[in-house]
Amino acid sequence: MAKYSVLLCVALSLLLLVTAAGLYPGGSLGAPRSDGFDWSQNFITNLFGARALNGAANPGRWWAVAGMAFHALGQGLFFRHMSRKMPTRHAAAVLQGVGGANLLFSFLVVTPLHDAMVHLSSAVALLGLFYVTVFVFRSRLRWFKFGCPVCLLLGYATLYLYGAGHWGALAIMQKVSLGSALLLVVGLEYFTHRDDFAPPHPGGPKTPATTR
Image (tube, rainbow, N blue to C red; front, side, top):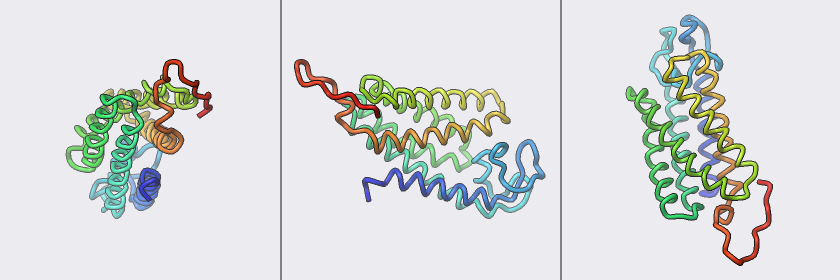
C-alpha cells in the first residue's frame, strides 16, 4: 500500500474536490448569482467557504477540506520519496524540508490564512520542483526534461497572475497548473528510480539511455 500512497492521495483528492464542486451552490467573482461551480470562473478556494459566493450555504465545504488534506499529504509524501532518489545529501535534505513544509502550508490554504499560505505553499513547492529539475537535467530522463520546466513556468505564471490580480485568466490557469503538476508528480513518483539520478562513475560502464 505504501508504494501507491502518492497515487492514492492524488486520486482521493481529485475525487473529493470534484464532489465538492458538484455540491457547490453557485456564485463566482464575475457572476455572483450564477448557479453551480464553473471551472473556468470559480477558484478551488471558493469550495472551502461555509457559504458560496451567491450567499447560499455550501454543503460541499467539508468534502473540499478533505480533498485538500489528501492533496497536501500527497505532496508531502512525494517530496519525501523524491529525497530518497537524490544523489546528494544537500538535495535530499532540501526536499525533505520541502515535503514537510508543503504538507503544512498546503493544508492551511483552507483556513483564514489562505492568502499567506498560497504564497508560502507555492514558493516551497516551486523550490522543491526546481531542485528536482536540476537533477532531471543531469539525468537521461528525456521526457521529464520537458515536463519539469513546463510545470515550473506554469507555476510562475500562475503566481504572477495571482499577484497581478488577473482573476479571469487565473481561474483557468489555476486548473492547468494544478493538473500538469499532478501529472508530473505521478510520473516522477512511479517512472523514475534512484539509479536515474546517480552520477556516472568514471571509467565505469555507461548507463543505457532511457526514453522516460
